[in-house]
Length: 600
Image (cartoon, rainbow, N blue to C red; front, side, top):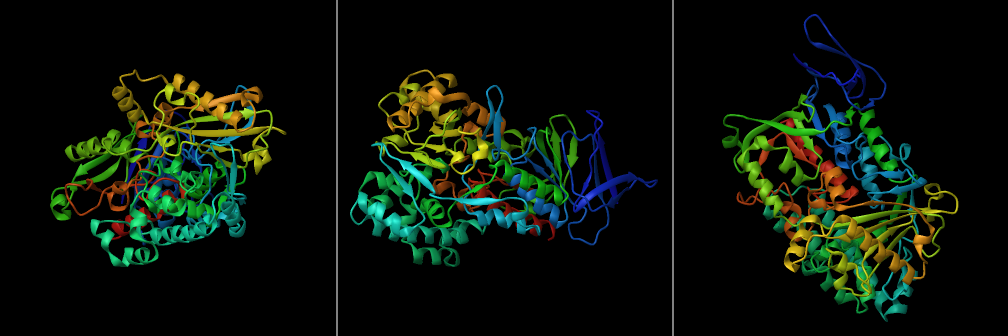
């Protein structure tokens, strides 16, 4: 039996939580902490001044083992609750004052009181994946979260100022499309069936199962059902090729490929398999958590604590601590570093020990900032990730309006009449000049939920994709122009959006705006540890998917990522990719890997 106690003097608070309830810890005469388990919930805490790590004999294969989760985003909270339920003593360390990462709802002082915005995720897709997170630990999502389907799913606002609603009713949707292009309705049904097959078989082959070798791509047990259901070329070639095969009208091509906005790609570099994004919206539906996405954050946090994890906010991790184990590298082979994790060191200087560390911050930032102890392999991985492809950044405008906008549904996407050119990400104010149109997403939750704004008003959130910070520097250098300030980009972007709303017949929104809050690329980078301010993390091109997505596991030593025993990753830039449901699917895979590793 061993006991390690670390005490700091930053306050008088003391919080200890057991795996399945509240614990009190007392140090006996023999020096071993005695844990008396109660039936209450774990508690969310801010600064914790006393941390006790205890390892005692137990009947469970992981009982007494400790896990630290760095970052309390969706992935961090998700894996923490699963590990706590499995018997680990779990501590979540979040650098910000609250958990959830980008998954949050916010209100703004100074004129924005009474208006609520979902400033991160705003579409709930694949609700069964949310539900699975709760059932995995013996709980029901319905006891924590109330959701409803948004109908219609979207309204598309085209560059010629016509609109089209994405309907779940196949017959009505077919009629709409035939009115635009003869025969398009039938081709839509064909395309949707194949896109749904991409979703069903693709998830089973490469998302629910981890990929650990380049040979997975030719493993018939994985790819056979998918290849039989969908032409492999349709999956691998750019989505533009697929769209051109089904639709002639550029508005329809744009309609079924704009989802690339959410993964930081375009129809010209996104593989056709990404049709699955549209398939889930049109078949499973688009859903809304009543009360906004803060309810998702709060529910995952409550679930985590009920399982007994300690959640510490304002606790920034400076380093993931590792140590060399003689002979381990030779024993494991491949790209194993011969090291294992031993815990973390906080920015305050406090050191916490752990058997397992799960890193939830953006994976490239973890290698940049927290893994110096890995040495040369870690440095090379950081350099490799610096050269990787990243998604776009965004200017996020949150507008408090005195009136509702009748022409907007809950979810809206504005699509340019310049189908190809609109996917070039703006890098300077000149890229927003009139008469250019841009693709952007508009969230208008008052259409579904009147509680998000004062009576008669609306809370409008606009996501305007722009270059990430690295891209912007490269483009400006190539053009021979200085890198603009973020203030200049905000002003130009704002005017472009307001111009588009006015041209589309929605009036001058500036006249009914009572407050504005804007999030710029540097804020995405600093607050949420997103490298280059790329809001969707690493891009999702073919060479950054499945076995090629970090941690890379192809079986080719020159390509693969370093391995450290006990270190795991969750989040948007690791596998399987960006978006709450994908992150939660990745959480499941990582939890299974940890249990296999720790019970071997």
